[in-house]
Image: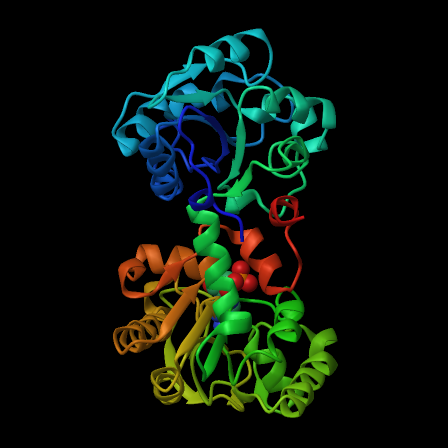
Length: 396
Ligand code: AMP
C-alpha cells in the first residue's frame, strides 16, 4: 500500500482529496466534525515535511450548480479550528483563481478549494476536469474513504495524472487495514455481527465474509426472515417472505464453511411499533399473533456476549433492535457493552456501515471499540468484496 509515509513532501504541493461531507443544521452549522478530525494526521504529516496542502472535497448534493448553501466557505471556520491553523479559501476548484491561489501557496500553508460538485464533471468522472484539478498540485493524496466507492474525477480519475506521486492518506490506510483485518489477516476467532432491518441489503456481505469468519451473529429485523424460514411463528415482526429460501441457503453455506451461526433465541416483543407499546419477552419461535419482535431478549444477549468475549476479531454492522426507541435499545446497548469488553481484553473490533456507527456515536462507544469506519457505503462495498475505484486508482 503506497501511503504518504513513503514520500517526502518538502516544497511540494499536495492535492488532498478529503471527505468533508459533514452534517449541518438548518443554520449550516457543522453538527459532527468527525470527518474533518479524521484527516488531521494526513495534513500534519505533509506540513511537517515542509509541504503545503490543497484540500478538495464535495459537500452535499449541489448537482453541478453553484449554490451558496453548499459552499465550503460555510465550514471553513470548523476546518481551521480542527486543524488548528489558518486555512485559506478559494471560491473555485478549477480555473484561474484556483490556479493563482495554489501557485501562491507557501510551505506550511493550507488551501481549501470550493465544492467540487459545483461542477457536474466531478461526478461524471470527466477526464478534462480531473486534468485541470491535477494542475494545482505536485502530488495526489486520497484520504476520502467516504467517497472511495465512487469513480469521480477527484476520487479516482485524477490519479492517472500522478503516475509516481499518488498516495493513500493515513485515514484511508486505517480504513483499509481495518477491513483487511476482518476479511484476511485478523486473529481468530473472527466474529461478524450483522443486524439491521433487511436480509436483502446484507446478503452480499454475508456471502463474502463466510469464508473469513468463524462465527456469525444475525440479529435485528433481519433475523425474523431466518426464524420464519426455520418454521418459527413471528407474529407481525418484519420479514422478507421472498428471502426465506435465501436464508436457508445462507445457513447451509455457513455449515459448509464451518461457520457457527447464532440467531436470537428469545426476543422482546411489542403490541405495536411504538416506544410506548406494551412489551414482554418470549421464545423467538413462539411470537403471538399481532405482536412483533423489536429487540434481542436477555438470553440472546448472554449467548452473543459469550461468543463475542471469545473472539479476537469482531465486525459489527447493524443494530440488533430498534434502538431509536429507548424501550427497545437494551439489546443493542448490551451488544455494544460486550464488544467494548472484548476490545478491552485485546480483541480488534471494527464498527462499520450505517446505523451501528450512528448507534456507537449516540451511546458513547466510539472510544471503546478499536475502529469506527468513517465511510458508510464505502465500508459496505468493501465488505461485499468489491474493489473501490478510489483504492484501485492508487494501487494500479
Ligand atoms: P440497516 O439500515 O439495515 O442497518 O437497519 C437499521 C435499522 O434496523 C434501524 O433503524 C433499526 O431500528 C432497524 N431494526 C433493528 N431491529 C429491528 C426489528 N426487530 N424490527 C424492525 N426494525 C428493526
